[in-house]
Length: 338
Image (cartoon, rainbow, N blue to C red; front, side):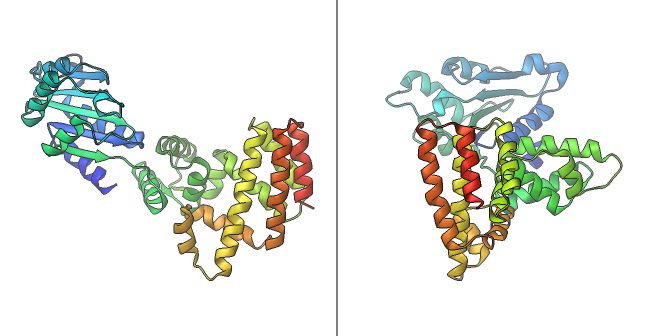
Protein backbone atom coordinates (compact mmCIF):
# COMPACT_ATOMS: atom_id res chain seq x y z
CA UNK A 1 0.00 0.00 0.00
CA UNK A 2 2.85 2.38 0.78
CA UNK A 3 4.21 1.87 -2.74
CA UNK A 4 0.86 2.96 -4.19
CA UNK A 5 0.69 5.98 -1.87
CA UNK A 6 4.19 7.04 -2.98
CA UNK A 7 3.18 6.64 -6.62
CA UNK A 8 0.13 8.89 -6.13
CA UNK A 9 2.26 11.48 -4.32
CA UNK A 10 4.77 11.55 -7.20
CA UNK A 11 2.04 11.90 -9.83
CA UNK A 12 0.46 14.80 -7.92
CA UNK A 13 3.91 16.40 -7.69
CA UNK A 14 4.35 16.11 -11.46
CA UNK A 15 6.95 13.33 -11.33
CA UNK A 16 5.57 11.22 -14.18
CA UNK A 17 7.35 8.13 -15.53
CA UNK A 18 7.24 7.45 -19.28
CA UNK A 19 5.84 3.96 -18.76
CA UNK A 20 3.87 2.07 -16.12
CA UNK A 21 2.53 -1.44 -15.66
CA UNK A 22 -0.36 -1.53 -13.17
CA UNK A 23 -1.67 -5.01 -12.45
CA UNK A 24 -3.54 -7.01 -9.83
CA UNK A 25 -7.07 -7.60 -8.59
CA UNK A 26 -7.61 -4.33 -6.67
CA UNK A 27 -9.25 -2.25 -9.41
CA UNK A 28 -10.39 0.69 -7.27
CA UNK A 29 -6.83 1.79 -6.47
CA UNK A 30 -5.76 1.19 -10.08
CA UNK A 31 -8.57 3.48 -11.23
CA UNK A 32 -7.43 6.09 -8.71
CA UNK A 33 -3.91 6.08 -10.22
CA UNK A 34 -5.31 6.37 -13.77
CA UNK A 35 -7.53 9.27 -12.67
CA UNK A 36 -4.56 11.10 -11.12
CA UNK A 37 -2.54 10.59 -14.31
CA UNK A 38 -5.39 12.07 -16.34
CA UNK A 39 -5.62 15.07 -14.00
CA UNK A 40 -1.86 15.64 -14.15
CA UNK A 41 -1.32 15.10 -17.87
CA UNK A 42 -4.49 15.73 -19.82
CA UNK A 43 -6.36 19.00 -19.27
CA UNK A 44 -10.03 18.77 -20.22
CA UNK A 45 -9.55 21.06 -23.22
CA UNK A 46 -6.91 18.78 -24.78
CA UNK A 47 -8.22 15.33 -23.81
CA UNK A 48 -9.72 14.78 -27.27
CA UNK A 49 -6.23 15.07 -28.77
CA UNK A 50 -3.92 13.67 -26.11
CA UNK A 51 -5.79 10.90 -24.28
CA UNK A 52 -5.93 7.46 -25.87
CA UNK A 53 -7.73 4.67 -24.01
CA UNK A 54 -7.19 1.47 -25.96
CA UNK A 55 -8.46 -2.10 -25.93
CA UNK A 56 -5.94 -4.80 -25.11
CA UNK A 57 -5.94 -6.31 -28.58
CA UNK A 58 -4.49 -3.22 -30.29
CA UNK A 59 -1.79 -4.09 -32.81
CA UNK A 60 1.84 -3.54 -31.82
CA UNK A 61 2.65 -1.28 -34.78
CA UNK A 62 -0.43 0.86 -34.18
CA UNK A 63 0.47 1.21 -30.49
CA UNK A 64 4.10 2.13 -31.16
CA UNK A 65 3.10 4.66 -33.85
CA UNK A 66 0.70 6.28 -31.40
CA UNK A 67 3.28 6.31 -28.60
CA UNK A 68 5.73 8.06 -30.93
CA UNK A 69 3.17 10.74 -31.86
CA UNK A 70 3.80 14.14 -30.32
CA UNK A 71 0.98 15.65 -28.23
CA UNK A 72 -1.15 18.50 -29.57
CA UNK A 73 -1.42 21.81 -27.64
CA UNK A 74 -0.04 20.17 -24.47
CA UNK A 75 3.30 18.87 -23.16
CA UNK A 76 2.17 15.25 -22.70
CA UNK A 77 0.14 12.45 -24.28
CA UNK A 78 -1.41 9.74 -22.09
CA UNK A 79 -2.01 6.28 -23.54
CA UNK A 80 -3.80 3.64 -21.44
CA UNK A 81 -3.90 0.06 -22.76
CA UNK A 82 -6.49 -1.97 -20.85
CA UNK A 83 -5.82 -5.70 -20.39
CA UNK A 84 -3.19 -6.07 -23.10
CA UNK A 85 -3.18 -9.50 -24.74
CA UNK A 86 0.62 -9.20 -24.77
CA UNK A 87 0.62 -9.68 -21.00
CA UNK A 88 -1.92 -12.48 -20.77
CA UNK A 89 -1.17 -16.18 -20.61
CA UNK A 90 -2.03 -17.63 -24.02
CA UNK A 91 -0.87 -21.17 -24.60
CA UNK A 92 1.07 -21.62 -27.81
CA UNK A 93 0.75 -17.97 -28.88
CA UNK A 94 3.91 -16.26 -30.09
CA UNK A 95 4.48 -12.57 -30.76
CA UNK A 96 5.42 -11.57 -34.30
CA UNK A 97 9.19 -11.10 -33.95
CA UNK A 98 9.48 -8.21 -36.42
CA UNK A 99 6.54 -6.34 -34.88
CA UNK A 100 7.65 -6.98 -31.32
CA UNK A 101 11.09 -5.53 -32.18
CA UNK A 102 9.31 -2.19 -32.73
CA UNK A 103 7.86 -2.35 -29.21
CA UNK A 104 11.14 -3.59 -27.77
CA UNK A 105 12.95 -0.58 -29.25
CA UNK A 106 10.31 1.78 -27.87
CA UNK A 107 10.56 0.30 -24.37
CA UNK A 108 14.32 0.83 -24.46
CA UNK A 109 13.90 4.48 -25.46
CA UNK A 110 10.36 5.78 -24.78
CA UNK A 111 9.28 9.21 -25.98
CA UNK A 112 9.55 11.79 -23.17
CA UNK A 113 6.26 13.43 -24.14
CA UNK A 114 4.29 10.16 -23.91
CA UNK A 115 3.12 8.39 -20.77
CA UNK A 116 2.21 4.81 -21.73
CA UNK A 117 0.27 2.77 -19.17
CA UNK A 118 -0.42 -0.94 -19.40
CA UNK A 119 -3.38 -1.53 -17.08
CA UNK A 120 -4.05 -5.19 -16.32
CA UNK A 121 -7.12 -5.92 -14.16
CA UNK A 122 -5.74 -9.19 -12.86
CA UNK A 123 -2.47 -11.06 -12.92
CA UNK A 124 0.08 -10.87 -15.71
CA UNK A 125 1.98 -13.68 -17.36
CA UNK A 126 5.56 -13.10 -16.33
CA UNK A 127 6.74 -15.44 -19.08
CA UNK A 128 5.54 -13.13 -21.87
CA UNK A 129 8.15 -11.08 -23.75
CA UNK A 130 6.52 -7.76 -22.91
CA UNK A 131 6.73 -8.37 -19.16
CA UNK A 132 10.36 -9.44 -19.42
CA UNK A 133 11.22 -6.34 -21.47
CA UNK A 134 9.48 -4.06 -18.96
CA UNK A 135 11.60 -5.58 -16.20
CA UNK A 136 14.77 -5.41 -18.29
CA UNK A 137 14.28 -1.70 -18.99
CA UNK A 138 13.49 -1.01 -15.32
CA UNK A 139 10.08 0.49 -15.95
CA UNK A 140 7.66 0.99 -13.05
CA UNK A 141 5.73 -2.21 -12.31
CA UNK A 142 3.22 -2.04 -9.47
CA UNK A 143 1.02 -4.87 -8.23
CA UNK A 144 -2.33 -3.95 -6.68
CA UNK A 145 -3.16 -6.68 -4.17
CA UNK A 146 -6.42 -6.73 -2.17
CA UNK A 147 -6.08 -4.96 1.18
CA UNK A 148 -6.68 -7.24 4.13
CA UNK A 149 -6.59 -7.17 7.91
CA UNK A 150 -4.96 -4.14 9.50
CA UNK A 151 -4.04 -2.62 6.11
CA UNK A 152 -7.69 -2.61 5.06
CA UNK A 153 -8.76 -1.23 8.44
CA UNK A 154 -6.15 1.57 8.28
CA UNK A 155 -7.15 2.47 4.71
CA UNK A 156 -10.84 2.69 5.66
CA UNK A 157 -10.21 4.93 8.68
CA UNK A 158 -7.94 7.21 6.61
CA UNK A 159 -10.45 7.38 3.75
CA UNK A 160 -13.15 8.52 6.18
CA UNK A 161 -10.74 11.09 7.60
CA UNK A 162 -10.07 12.42 4.08
CA UNK A 163 -13.84 12.87 3.75
CA UNK A 164 -13.81 15.02 6.89
CA UNK A 165 -15.19 12.40 9.27
CA UNK A 166 -13.91 10.24 12.12
CA UNK A 167 -15.02 6.64 11.65
CA UNK A 168 -15.23 4.75 14.95
CA UNK A 169 -13.43 1.40 15.01
CA UNK A 170 -16.63 -0.57 15.66
CA UNK A 171 -18.28 1.14 12.69
CA UNK A 172 -15.26 0.29 10.52
CA UNK A 173 -15.46 -3.35 11.63
CA UNK A 174 -19.16 -3.46 10.77
CA UNK A 175 -18.53 -2.02 7.28
CA UNK A 176 -15.72 -4.47 6.54
CA UNK A 177 -17.73 -7.41 7.86
CA UNK A 178 -20.71 -6.56 5.66
CA UNK A 179 -18.87 -5.45 2.51
CA UNK A 180 -15.67 -7.46 2.62
CA UNK A 181 -12.54 -6.29 0.85
CA UNK A 182 -14.14 -4.50 -2.11
CA UNK A 183 -12.81 -0.94 -1.75
CA UNK A 184 -15.33 0.48 -4.21
CA UNK A 185 -18.25 -0.88 -2.16
CA UNK A 186 -16.70 0.43 1.05
CA UNK A 187 -16.24 3.91 -0.45
CA UNK A 188 -19.84 3.92 -1.69
CA UNK A 189 -21.09 3.08 1.81
CA UNK A 190 -18.80 5.70 3.36
CA UNK A 191 -20.14 8.36 1.00
CA UNK A 192 -23.71 7.50 2.06
CA UNK A 193 -22.71 7.73 5.72
CA UNK A 194 -20.99 11.09 5.17
CA UNK A 195 -24.16 12.51 3.59
CA UNK A 196 -26.38 11.01 6.30
CA UNK A 197 -24.17 12.25 9.15
CA UNK A 198 -24.52 15.87 7.93
CA UNK A 199 -22.80 18.11 10.52
CA UNK A 200 -21.75 15.27 12.83
CA UNK A 201 -17.99 14.78 12.88
CA UNK A 202 -18.09 11.16 14.07
CA UNK A 203 -19.63 8.15 12.31
CA UNK A 204 -20.45 5.61 15.01
CA UNK A 205 -21.69 2.01 15.02
CA UNK A 206 -25.35 2.92 15.60
CA UNK A 207 -25.40 5.24 12.59
CA UNK A 208 -23.67 2.62 10.45
CA UNK A 209 -26.09 -0.14 11.45
CA UNK A 210 -29.01 2.18 10.64
CA UNK A 211 -27.82 2.90 7.12
CA UNK A 212 -25.76 -0.10 5.99
CA UNK A 213 -27.68 -3.27 5.23
CA UNK A 214 -26.49 -6.54 6.71
CA UNK A 215 -24.71 -8.88 4.32
CA UNK A 216 -25.50 -12.52 3.68
CA UNK A 217 -22.49 -13.49 5.84
CA UNK A 218 -23.68 -11.30 8.71
CA UNK A 219 -27.10 -12.97 8.66
CA UNK A 220 -25.40 -16.38 8.76
CA UNK A 221 -23.65 -15.29 11.98
CA UNK A 222 -27.01 -14.25 13.46
CA UNK A 223 -28.51 -17.60 12.48
CA UNK A 224 -25.67 -19.54 14.12
CA UNK A 225 -25.97 -17.32 17.22
CA UNK A 226 -29.61 -18.37 17.46
CA UNK A 227 -28.65 -22.04 17.01
CA UNK A 228 -26.09 -21.73 19.81
CA UNK A 229 -28.75 -20.23 22.08
CA UNK A 230 -31.14 -23.08 21.12
CA UNK A 231 -33.65 -20.42 20.09
CA UNK A 232 -35.75 -22.14 17.40
CA UNK A 233 -38.00 -19.12 16.80
CA UNK A 234 -35.09 -16.74 16.25
CA UNK A 235 -33.19 -19.29 14.15
CA UNK A 236 -36.19 -19.78 11.84
CA UNK A 237 -36.64 -16.01 11.63
CA UNK A 238 -33.00 -15.61 10.52
CA UNK A 239 -33.43 -18.43 8.00
CA UNK A 240 -36.48 -16.67 6.56
CA UNK A 241 -34.41 -13.48 6.15
CA UNK A 242 -31.83 -15.42 4.15
CA UNK A 243 -34.47 -17.01 1.94
CA UNK A 244 -36.07 -13.59 1.33
CA UNK A 245 -32.65 -12.40 0.12
CA UNK A 246 -33.11 -14.95 -2.70
CA UNK A 247 -30.01 -16.85 -1.66
CA UNK A 248 -29.82 -20.42 -2.96
CA UNK A 249 -30.67 -22.99 -0.25
CA UNK A 250 -27.52 -24.96 -1.11
CA UNK A 251 -25.45 -21.81 -0.50
CA UNK A 252 -27.16 -21.20 2.84
CA UNK A 253 -26.40 -24.78 3.86
CA UNK A 254 -22.79 -24.44 2.72
CA UNK A 255 -22.28 -21.24 4.74
CA UNK A 256 -23.83 -22.73 7.90
CA UNK A 257 -21.53 -25.74 7.51
CA UNK A 258 -18.51 -23.47 7.00
CA UNK A 259 -19.41 -21.50 10.12
CA UNK A 260 -19.81 -24.62 12.28
CA UNK A 261 -16.46 -25.94 11.01
CA UNK A 262 -14.73 -22.66 11.86
CA UNK A 263 -16.21 -22.71 15.37
CA UNK A 264 -14.99 -26.30 15.82
CA UNK A 265 -11.51 -25.43 14.54
CA UNK A 266 -11.16 -22.37 16.76
CA UNK A 267 -12.52 -24.24 19.79
CA UNK A 268 -9.94 -26.99 19.19
CA UNK A 269 -7.07 -24.50 18.73
CA UNK A 270 -8.03 -22.66 21.92
CA UNK A 271 -8.12 -25.91 23.87
CA UNK A 272 -4.59 -26.63 22.60
CA UNK A 273 -3.47 -23.29 24.06
CA UNK A 274 -3.22 -21.22 20.87
CA UNK A 275 -3.51 -17.44 21.08
CA UNK A 276 -6.23 -15.77 18.99
CA UNK A 277 -3.58 -13.89 16.99
CA UNK A 278 -2.03 -17.22 15.97
CA UNK A 279 -5.45 -18.61 15.03
CA UNK A 280 -6.28 -15.54 12.93
CA UNK A 281 -3.03 -15.95 10.97
CA UNK A 282 -3.49 -19.72 10.62
CA UNK A 283 -7.05 -19.46 9.28
CA UNK A 284 -6.52 -16.14 7.41
CA UNK A 285 -9.52 -14.53 9.13
CA UNK A 286 -10.29 -10.84 9.56
CA UNK A 287 -9.85 -10.00 13.28
CA UNK A 288 -13.45 -8.79 13.54
CA UNK A 289 -14.79 -12.04 12.03
CA UNK A 290 -12.50 -14.09 14.27
CA UNK A 291 -13.74 -12.17 17.31
CA UNK A 292 -17.37 -12.94 16.46
CA UNK A 293 -16.59 -16.64 16.00
CA UNK A 294 -14.62 -16.63 19.27
CA UNK A 295 -17.74 -15.43 21.08
CA UNK A 296 -19.76 -18.26 19.50
CA UNK A 297 -17.31 -20.94 20.67
CA UNK A 298 -18.68 -21.00 24.22
CA UNK A 299 -22.21 -21.65 22.94
CA UNK A 300 -21.33 -25.11 21.60
CA UNK A 301 -19.72 -28.25 23.01
CA UNK A 302 -17.43 -30.39 20.86
CA UNK A 303 -20.09 -33.11 20.60
CA UNK A 304 -22.75 -30.57 19.54
CA UNK A 305 -20.49 -29.26 16.78
CA UNK A 306 -19.55 -32.74 15.54
CA UNK A 307 -23.21 -33.87 15.58
CA UNK A 308 -24.19 -30.69 13.75
CA UNK A 309 -21.73 -31.47 10.96
CA UNK A 310 -23.16 -34.99 10.61
CA UNK A 311 -26.67 -33.52 10.42
CA UNK A 312 -25.56 -30.93 7.86
CA UNK A 313 -24.12 -33.66 5.61
CA UNK A 314 -27.40 -35.57 5.87
CA UNK A 315 -29.44 -32.54 4.80
CA UNK A 316 -26.97 -31.66 2.06
CA UNK A 317 -27.78 -35.05 0.49
CA UNK A 318 -31.51 -34.35 0.86
CA UNK A 319 -31.19 -31.03 -0.95
CA UNK A 320 -29.20 -32.65 -3.75
CA UNK A 321 -31.78 -35.45 -3.97
CA UNK A 322 -34.61 -33.08 -4.84
CA UNK A 323 -36.34 -32.56 -1.47
CA UNK A 324 -38.29 -29.30 -1.10
CA UNK A 325 -35.48 -26.77 -0.36
CA UNK A 326 -37.29 -24.38 2.00
CA UNK A 327 -38.95 -27.14 4.01
CA UNK A 328 -35.70 -29.12 4.18
CA UNK A 329 -33.82 -26.13 5.59
CA UNK A 330 -36.58 -25.39 8.11
CA UNK A 331 -36.47 -28.99 9.37
CA UNK A 332 -32.68 -28.81 9.57
CA UNK A 333 -32.74 -25.59 11.61
CA UNK A 334 -35.29 -27.03 14.04
CA UNK A 335 -33.11 -30.11 14.59
CA UNK A 336 -29.91 -28.05 14.96
CA UNK A 337 -31.58 -25.77 17.51
CA UNK A 338 -32.96 -28.64 19.60
